[in-house]
Length: 222
Image (cartoon, rainbow, N blue to C red; front, top):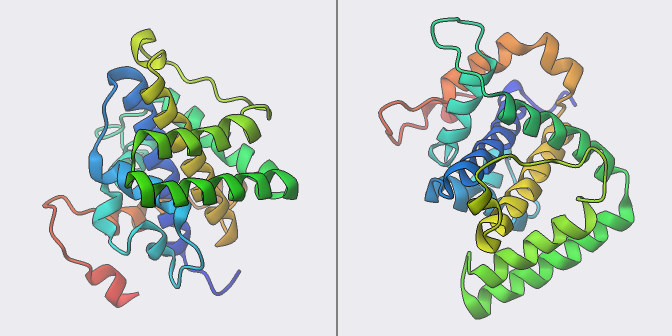
C-alpha cells in the first residue's frame, strides 16, 4: 500500500466520522447539515475515482463536519477533548462490518445492484428524493443489518420512528461502510489507527478550514 499516503487514509477515516456524526444528529434531532449529507450520500455513486478526495466531491470543504468530528473524538488534549461514545461506537462498528462485507462477494453484488436501481431513480425523481433514499436504505437493511455487530442507533423515539429519518440513517450507515471500505483499500487498519493516532490528528488538522475558506493548498502541496 506504499502508493497511498497518510492523507489518503485520513480522508477516508474522516468520511467514516462524518457519517457517524450525521447518524447521531439525525437520531437525536432529526436534522443534519445539507452539504455534509449530500457529500456522504454521493460517495455511494462514485466509481473509479482518480484520487481519494474525488470520492468526496474533490473538495475538502465537503468534509469539514468529519474533520471536526475526528479531531474532537481522537484528540488527547483535555482542553479540546469532546468525545461522544455513541459516535465512537458507530465508527468502530462500521469498520468491523466493512471488513465482513468486503469478504462477502454475494452481498456486495446485491448492494451494487440495488445502488444501480437508486442511481436510475435519480434521473426520474432527482437527487436525494425520498424514493432514492429508501432504495439505498433497503440495500443496507437487506444486506448489512443481518450481520453482526448490528448497529443499534440510539436517539429520540419520534425521529427513529419517522420513516424518512430512518431511511436517511440507514443510507448514511451504508455510506459509512463505503468510506470504511475505502479506508482499508488505501492502507488503513484498526491496529494502525491505534499506533498512528498522532499522524491522523496532524493530517486532519491540516485539512481543517476554520474560516470556511476555499484554500486547497494542502492538496496542492501533497
